[in-house]
Image: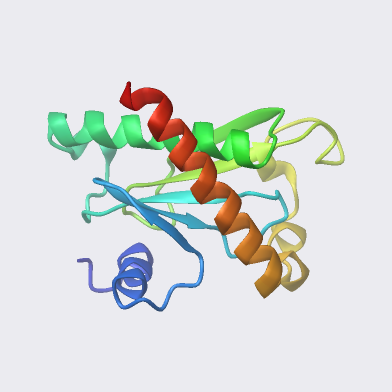
Length: 155
């Protein structure tokens, strides 16, 4: 665990059963909803291991991590009725592999384009945090969609 790593701190909260945004543990990572929901259904897939770059992962782990991210992205699309999915692995702010999964809907930004065109003060404003009820519903819908997608590929 990275001592000052925000992602590692969030994972520790999951392991201590103190992260209200936690949805599901998978073999290579944890599915969590974003604290901010300007884009409804914004989800993260946090790599279990503190690895800073995708290309630094052992090949077998990397392939499984990519596959699971793809399953989670498909589940997000299903659960939140996305018109398009934006999927990003950046790590410039938090150097621990994690995916940002944004269900996108037509007209969800002032002009068509990437989510980063939205002013961060607007995207991460306090008003974008889900209520307890909204969070519970989103977690339920995403968990159900993950189950559907996993079943689809288990055959």
